[in-house]
Amino acid sequence: MAAKKSGSHLSKNVLQMKFMQRSVLRLEKEQNEEDKQKVIDDEHWVLDLPDYQIKESKYLKDQSYVICEQLQFGRQSFLGCNPEIEKLMQAHKLEQELKVSDEKEKQNSVSDQDMAQRYSSLMGIIAKKFSKKRQRNDEANDDESGEPRSKSFMKPSDD
Amino acid sequence: MEKHIGCLVMPGDVLDCIKPVEENKKVILGPGLIEDGNFIKISKPGILKFRQPGVYWIDCHQKRYVPAKNDSVIGIITQKPGDIFRVDIGGSELASLSYLSFEGATKRNRPDVKIGDIVYAKLLVANKDMEPELVCIDSHGRSSGMGVIRKGGFLFHCHINLARKLLNPECVVLKQLGRRFKFEIAVGINGRVWVKANNEIQTIAMANAVMASELMNNVQIETMCKKLSKVSSGIDED
Amino acid sequence: MASFIVVKKEDLEKKQNVEPCHTLRCLTSELGCLTRQDGSVSLSQGDTTSLAVVYGPAEVRISRELIDRATVELVYKPKVGLPRPADRKREQIMKSIFEATIITNLHPRSSITIILQETEDLGSNLACCINAACLALLDAAVNMSFMVAAVAVSVADEGQIKLDPSKNDEEKGRASITFVFDSVDLNVVSIVTSGKFSQIEYKAGLELAREASQKVFQFFKDSMSRKLIR
Image (cartoon, rainbow over all chains, first blue to last red; front, side, top):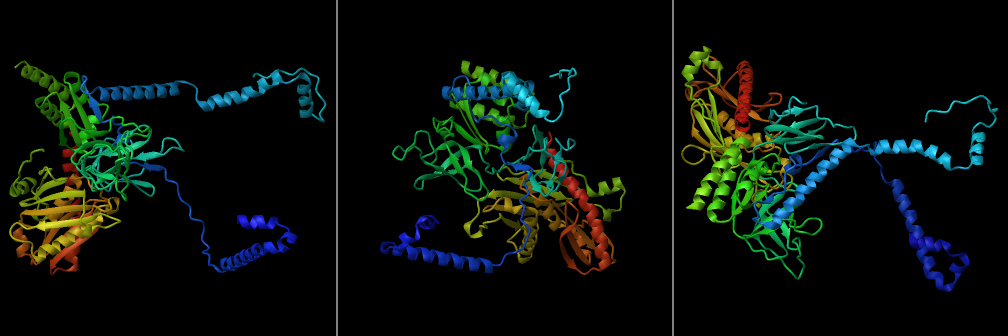
């Protein structure tokens, strides 16, 4: 395919030159093969079936009890029998505690989605603060183009 | 659904109301549950268990180990053909363990592993259609407690239930024993337990205590540990 | 394991005051009676007793390996002597039943071996063997798509149908039929017959056996709950 692309960039005059004859032959051959392929493709039979849809399962299969029962790490040491393992146990314990506290925090604090929603509504207000007065007026004019501006008092919105 | 949880279920029973808690989340089906169209079929006799968020499994009594991914097991090296070790983990097939999957192992620097050694390893590949594959390193390349277990000790086989019970965070066997005795233990989820204490007598005592705890509840375990520590202090004085 | 009270058949019948030909004999089981096997059970139906053990999913001989499912092997050992052709036939029948019961495609390239030892044959031996094998599979927690229960009936010369016949009934009777039912819809999985019987007798026997099979399934459940719920 790459060869074909580069070939198409070469002009006719260049291809007529004597040293380009081999390339011309190759290009012709490729063209012929492509045509042949097309003929075969048309002749090939196609089953007119609706697309096979892979139904996504709502279940995950897991044959391990370790995940189901949240089992601990299997090597343990007590009262300093194997300091290396005890260090590991300590690390595992810390990890577990961190996980638990993380989960607790997640439950108590504002979720990411709530945060995003709050900020997106705030954005408009803050943006207004930074835009110049004239710009603001222009925007206002754009919004109400055609309609005469009412001179009556407008109640400020709550937010 | 709730009425089935904690109850005995038998093969052929059908559960039709297992549903995800939230729409886009999936339910995890543990051992003994098989998906069959819209229903969940039970394939093993046991007690249906449930854990938040949406994990269901059957707690059954079993002796034979069926390899599952990420399980930590105790294996015995049985063969050394070429670049891998063949390890007996109690499943239907021997597992393979590459000599490069040890901490600090390189092509030059082979780990010192002999036939008959005990290894504590994790299952990297456990698929019904493939040979199980073990590793003795974590994803950072560190051993993190895995590898060859030497220095004596005693290895015994038990029911898979007992191994699961020992590792359950709610079970007090190891905590109670650990408060009173100086010992080290390695529990493979494939029903193999390795124990080591100061001397042979204590090692045997620990192994017996662990084996006896299979059918006890937490209160009984506590009394057993108390008795054991009284008896053993008597031995030490003699 | 829990202890069991042996109840004499005659006493039980007297107590229940039910017609003896329409009841199952007393079922007792001992799960995990052997320690080295993955699953073992000693089951007695009345005085007929058999011992079943299960190994699996375990290593398989390469000559018997199947790449897409587990190989189910079943060995029947008579009380005395070597297995005869009749025993071999019985093996084949039971093997085909358990191949359907066990979800074999969950454990490809492995074997599930069931060994049955006849310990006492006093009637309905085949039914007792099938029930023992099923209970042993439950004890080993092999993945199964359903359970099976076998119930035997015999047809006497006068056409009277007897459920769960004793050796005497079997020998005197004109025919004996063993029905095997599945636990889901109580459909017939397999039938083993010998002797001559009419269609009406067959139908009457089937209904009688189907009703009795529910008791067998309940017994399986009770046995497992004794083992699992403490």
